[in-house]
Length: 121
Image (cartoon, rainbow, N blue to C red):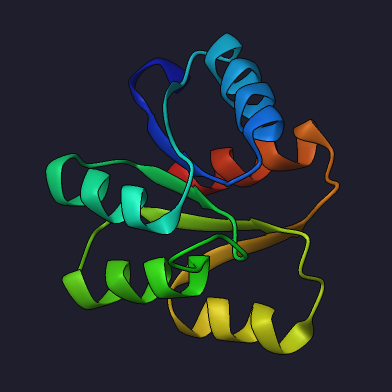
């Protein structure tokens, strides 16, 4: 199943980005990464992804702003928020703008994997 699934992982934490990219690649997913919201928007204008893993607090453009861009453009990707922001109002805003899940850091890799699998089934 995973071999045809394209994932965009957006996070400004380089070490975490590398770790998640490596773990997901070992599971057979095709993973692209971006270190901020601006880069993610440019990538979304040029490529399509099945799942977008999106941090909230990033320089220049927040994950919520990227999420609103995805919704406004009608991009047909499933979005999972991955963030250290453990705030119910932010989680509700994320869901209101189209996110299908909201995982707070630190999270277990197995939890992320289950969320991705639910997103693509």
